[in-house]
Length: 189
Image (cartoon, helix red, strand yellow):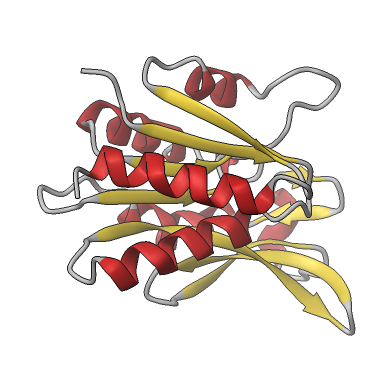
């Protein structure tokens, strides 16, 4: 059976994370017993400037994902994306338990399957296990750079049962309703 995979893409800052948060809020208010697992990524700001990203679980636990101003001795060995150093161990400690497939899980949410997260060698195999479990999942993915997708992202987009929604500032509200409807259909509510 094909996976129930909804992928939201769009330019940075277009509102992918906000859209998913609003969809989850609507889902939870109409279906309070729904068991949802996963995480969001959120900007870390200091004095109005973005200095990193953190992982936030659906029950509001947080851990650093990437930082510009890290001074720990081990951080010199961390992979970099632009000016950010990616704390793979911190990411894995919080995100990976959220991606464990459990019998009673109704939906997985992953924000995002992107370059920083993919530095974890354990992350994409966990995403693939979710796909194979046939549990519905809603994820954000980066827009291709120079027309080229990250290989793991391309693999997700090309997976049977994957539907890709491209978000723009002008279609955000319509997309929220469309994705919500698709998701409700896949959840068999």
